[in-house]
Image (tube, rainbow, N blue to C red):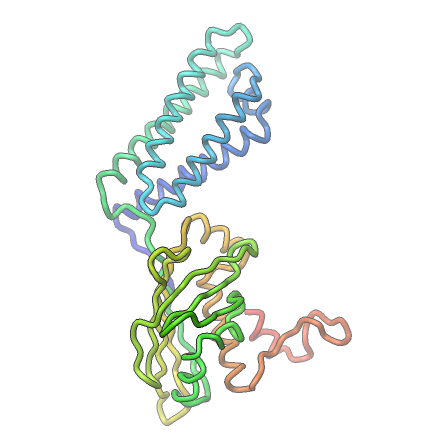
Length: 302
């Protein structure tokens, strides 16, 4: 379950992210297809200049996503808009320009500039207008005692055994651990975390250290199920990696978003603790892409 607010600051940040995607898209078009962009705008095909403008737009777009509070990145877009308007206005004097198309481009850039100015002012004036962390809450019932599950989880070096995207966890000190995980596109990210609270056989809470690549905090609780029918495992996770808005979107496209990872990891944890192993379908002897057990295929592939 992911919480998504609808406050004014959230709406402003949605606009900011939209402008960021627009900046990335137009920038890539100018870098890869400068002649086409020039033709649509009705200006002379000065490809080197258009590519430079494209790189500037890409930089602005990335900055919007990677800055926690992207006021500076938005104002850089306003400065870029002013440059675009000046170049377009100057091109009206060229005999090689299509006046009608240039005027249309000026009107379009003018409209985008108005949005950029509005978003820049709103983010600058509102301290709550910033990329917010994502909250994830998931639970599962496992047919093992709280004591067994707590003991296994408390040794964080066990976590890569069922957390598919965690490559390694290594103890670095008292209650401190170094994590390495696969990020969007298969790129590794790493961070240091510490246990900040724990109650034996009941709860473990942790958070990343200041300066880590990923800003994250979480907890896991082990609650005995009614009538001693196993243990309810409840995981709460909050994360905000650098470029969260961009990274989360890319992760979603690649099927690696944490909100999808957590329930899948919990299902693997259940298998490991109840069956002693995790049922996998790769490498079947007959080259089958699926196992002969539909039940386990559905469990693993959900």
